Amino acid sequence: MKPYKHLLFRQSFINGKWTKESDKNFDVVNPSTDKKIISVYDNSEKSIKKAIDAAYLSMPKWKALAAKDRSTILLKWFDLIHANKEAIATIMTLESGKPYQESLGEINYGAAFIQWFAEEAKRMYGDIIPGFSADKRIAVIRQPIGVVGAITPWNFPLAMITRKIAPALAAGCSVVVRPSELTPLTALAINKLAHDAGFPNGVINTVVGLDASKMGLALCESDKVAKISFTGSTRVGQILSAQSAQTLKKLSLELGGNAPMIIFEDADIDAAIKGTIAGKFRFSGQTCVCVNRILVHENIYETFVKKFTSAVKDLVIGDGFAKNTQIGPVINQKAIEKAQFFVKDAVSKGGKIKTGGKIRKGLFFEPTVIADATEDMNFAQEEIFGPIAPIFKFSTDQEAIDMANNTIFGLASYFYSKDINRIIKVSEALEYGIVGVNEGLISSEVVPFGGVKYSGTGREGSKYGIEDYTELKYICVGGV
Ligand code: ADP
Image (cartoon, rainbow, N blue to C red; front, side):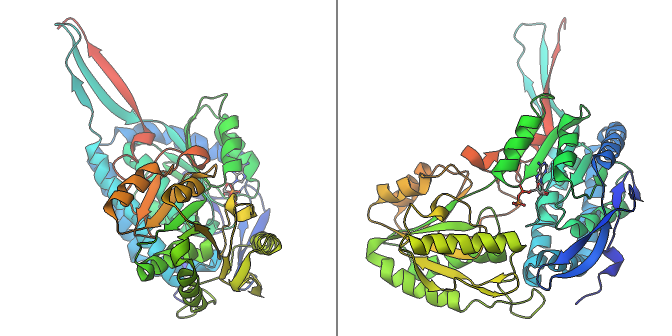
């Protein structure tokens, strides 16, 4: 294990200082070993309010900087994260169970948003519109939206934060981050590095606490917060949305998914298996773009199931720090119970376990393949968020599209085919924010990430990702 203790912190970071509200604390636990890593101080909505005030007061100066100067600080932060990436990856693997190589991958991915938006900061262009009468000149400019509250989950302890706050900071907003209580350590480590990079006090605050509901409510109810950016469950997204009605806050919500992976008859089966393994089993299936349902054409069904099962059997389960580990633990006992429930439900309705289906030990659930999956099984409608791969059968393109779209969710979707007409038609017919064609990994800082239907609203990353953190202002100069 690489040295990491210099980046391990117990207090929240508010207005440029390590802060604790009281001596109340709670343990952050390693899901691989069930051992405590460290106790962190527990803060409530009181500290959130303090952080909101700090963010609010710091914003005028921050937004007044030239975009180039904000960009320079963001790039320094990017460099510091890279310089400390082994320590951060160690902390991340400790608190999330994510295989160390995946943690390093997340740091590259997450830091890339900082670099990208440092560049985009300088390109927040507006428009000049021909006046609606001869004496008028019209300009449209973009200005930072205001203080942003970022509420983030445990599955990407770094990237879900940077994907939100890098565009916010680039645009000139200040932020209050409320990380998941399960993975607060990575969040505190990167906040420290942000401070070292030169962000003024109050521009980035991270408040750690157990009472997510009250902390979320404080962010939603505050008039000083202009926007909430949330990644997590649809249920909590709905709560935040309802709570934000009174203050008419802007919301970006990146919520649950139920990603289909369609394997058409003409697909390159080996490539499809590789893509499905990557899209399904990343972080033990615990990402919102993970493949949830595999739909395979009847003519290649048996071959696919056989080859896929054999590839899944080769996946290496183990502690995130063990060499070659591909599948770590799931996050907690609740996740184990959910996985067991899905397997039991599927088997009771005729599903056939081809491999896995059981707990290996502790929080390690075996990578599982279930063939003969049908639409009455629970995972047809619910997000699995675990290492279970159900395989459904279809016979026509229309049937595959209908099955794929038969969900309230609309985040990521995938399919494999070599037929150009089919590729175009199916891409257009899928009711999803993201379509991966002959590809199981689709995340990057350069693309707009986000969903439709109950998967939320707003896009993160890409040139579009900064728009959600700005407001358009139209200026009309008359009497010219
Ligand atoms: P998950 O099942 O992935 O943990 P959640 O939506 O429950 O998804 O959690 C995502 C994040 O939202 C976590 O940081 C969690 O602590 C936080 N959270 C949970 N409930 C609320 C709430 N009522 N208000 C604000 N944040 C919440």
